[in-house]
Image (cartoon, rainbow over all chains, first blue to last red):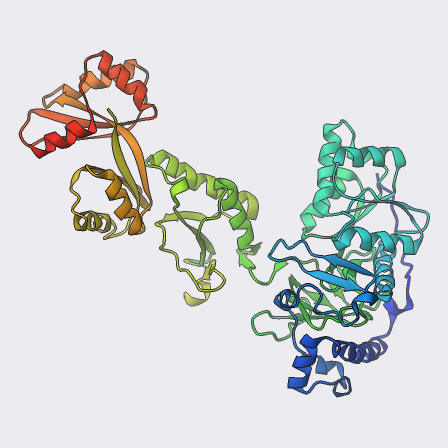
Length: 440
Length: 146
């Protein structure tokens, strides 16, 4: 059995600042951020209109007066329009994959890179990494922030790095077996893939040298943590970040693993109701909004992450005073809670895609006829998957139902409807109709 | 020898059948025969018309999803046991009938059975080997005229 024990040592004094001191520091840095943002035409125009100057920010409450920044703003200012420094002052450029549209690029100055490495070092250290360890980094080294972000964080601690990068799982397993790293850095799903491939190679993933892992880069669940820990016999930590702000390093778990400590001296995190834009209470789920307090190249103000999580300002056994955030449970643009299960239209869309290799028009209708939620997925029949045979049509319905059940863990009524019967909107397609509020 | 059959997806709601019928009527297309298969939630309308290409065009223009399938039409005596003889042949040839429907002509003592097979060519060969008259499209439309 894994005997990995984490002490409660803390890397930086800022992680334990008393609340008043932390807020004083945040206020100073918020004003500096507004001053830097004046160099960005996008922000300068808004500030001018709203009468915002660094001096007009006199308390953290004034944050409310600052505008939100969205992914659309980044796209509108593509590729580097939100940079506050000259192109020559950039030390590196990373990018997002562009899975939800055009890719976005993010610039870093040398100072940004130093800060970023320190932020990654902090959460790695909180999660047990020490200079004596060897770490295999199985994040891609490239535009994606995961690989390089974690790499320099590990270097900051002084541990030894195996920059395996992503892909070629068989080789990854050979490296682990031969070089005996103590820790793994990857996405949680890739860890499961490593375990699976190892078993197929007759290598017992539980017998490998790995004792702990820091996972990030994608949404995952507590169930998945248990599964990985059981299959690989290691201790799994969660961390959070997004490239628009900096990459990994915004928050990470300590040994207690009861939420991820936010590096509040560098990142000001709000949690809001995505509909009303009002702040939500601690422990209540809302959308994270992040202001980067020390970023030089891109001083991001109130960035709407679309990530749904909750905050906890309570004390932690580890001694850090920073607030903690829960794991991200979904995206604000599309989360549904069905009988307590979080369901995303994207999961249902993916299931539909898997069935027919095409994305049909669909509508998810949520109702509560009695006391239980009911989900009806209406799918428009398309020529490619219409058959004159009744058996094939019934099969199609069943296949869709099974796929959705596998993907989203909910049972739905699949209803095939005639083409052109689902409402089209001019902008973003309406995919969800929630009737629960409108019924008794 | 095969006949083109149009099939359409219909929601099982009042008025859904009349829409394609109206579209065909407006285009001056006569329906020779039709059948509807239905579940509680949706149905499949299958029909045979002379000018199936035009029918498909106008139906699709009206927003229908239309499939064209080849079916086999055979002639049977319009008397007790007329169908059994054909079914025996199909059965002994090991062919599977997906579905079938029948209609009769006004002035004849023969009925026409429309079969949907997975492999219509194989079915035609088996039936013709036993001297069953397969009715092609042209012949079918001519006889309806009479």
